[in-house]
Length: 282
Image 1: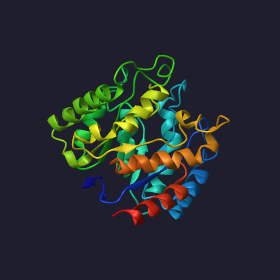
Image 2: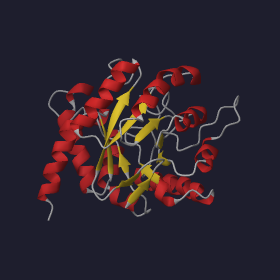
Image 3: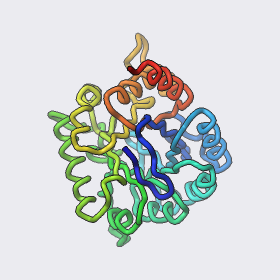
Image 4: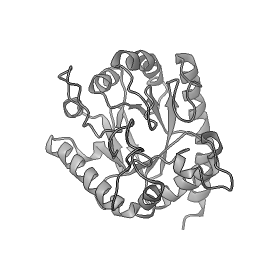
């Protein structure tokens, strides 16, 4: 199985580790640590030494309750990092939902658009549409994620009912919409959106029912890293920086159940655990 992106055809026969680079002052787990261009690039280089296969760079926090960042500010944070990161020899993903930012990132040489809104967001003041950005590009990769509501309200009013069925239907609908636009299936990866408008029980139901999502025929990208659903996995609630063990365990379970890409903060620990997993396969 291959994932076609701007510059790379990523071989998904082996699970890929996507390292998270938050070039923002307010991300839920490491906000401010990599907010400057130099700090973000240093973190990119460290993640590659730790074993990352892909780098996912974002400049707007989408934690529950986060406020939107103006396009100009997001671009000012992002573009210097993206331009330098594209020289590092690995696929570069941009974590954004704004069509203007997507276009600027692709113009800077980015390989993958990782969109929490599954290309649905539109700006009434700007005519550019996210699906058009993807359709007009000859080969960029795209990750469509399921999110209930939006970051400001998603955890105040989480979704109800059978989460696996609803997520499956949503992802199928939006993947099919891209196919209708002529976008090749090999460019598309799906993300069930752990933590985005779901209860703790629903997040674990997605992990338990992950095989159902694979029936759609697209690779899965899963992001459990440091999520609040993991906070209760110890006798004392764990803060974001204390969730290494449950994060790695969740990533391994996701891979064991068919995920081909895991999006993580703790690249070294995840990469080492996956080596053990791979060595034990029969």
